[in-house]
Length: 479
Image (cartoon, rainbow, N blue to C red; front, side, top):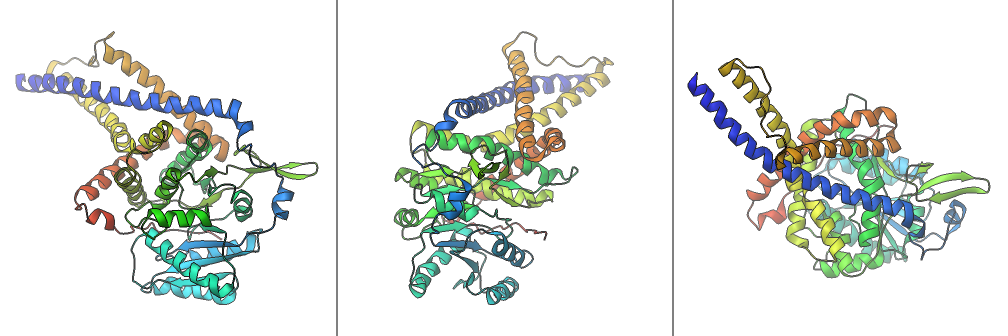
């Protein structure tokens, strides 16, 4: 009995120390989120009307009447036979644009995808072009896109017309009808234009795919517009991104003749940030169409009207989501830190720090759950050793740790409320309520992905870290 009591006392002392460290880190992260939310309020209440004041006002009518610049759409593919024909045919049907061509990058050892794309290209030879890479896959998405770009530059000579806009989308994307019209309007006023990305609605019990809804709602309703306002640059989401021709050549100068770096798993994230150092402007096009008496107009209120946003299904299985987010953590936090350092203005470095805090935040959030479990274990051990059922007072009331824990309670409530509001704006009341329990499940996914990313990164040599292969997610597309 004495040994058990001693073990409980020892666990108690360790637990108190760990609680102090975790609680402090959690509060710092919460304050950081609060700072960005305050900036968001300032932006939406006082600066929103002045956003992009250098651009002429426009309506949907003028947007559709604007002369169409030639657009090259790039779709990298690896084992996408199940979805890519549906995606291409739907894009051809819904896009309110005519002066474009879709280039699909396919590996020579991916015969199923090749056959599916060939059938669409044969049926629509003026719209879809199949680009067969000169090496087997999978490599990386950046290698695939770079190969497509090389082919496009050659194809321009055949067509006798250079492309002015280059767009990246994925094989599972549901494209908005006015995607290319928006790029056509903003480019070349801006060199990189990003549309919002919102996951397709998940069932109420699908917590894995549902937590993406909550995260992207918060990111693309609130965080990205403020990031653009503060820094003048935003990272690409890898889909729904338009690049000017000038930005591609700038990328080639920065990446030794290749537009996108092939030493990262998130080349889409890195290129716009590299272009920021070269004073190439970017824009987050959070637009929606609203009816009015004389037609329709666009506004920057992303939650009103019909949103111009890319939609797609995200992973439904736990470990599929972990694999996908492992790729994001490696590319954005680890490889991004390696390649980009801490360049740029103070605002820019602050946003880089927010990107990279996932290395700590994703782990700390999950450790909080472990602390709860340990506290319950100590409570049970105390009951066995002493017969007392009183909950253990781990932290002395009035101590600094006690005040930090009280502050963290309010931080958690506040963060869940903000998350619910953003989810409500896109998906409605039911999903807003579900966003709280989904946050717990999402924290588990993020923890596993972060630990797996760090393990993969550390077990590769410095040279091998630039050759981590494309761990692609399996996709679905419903007609």
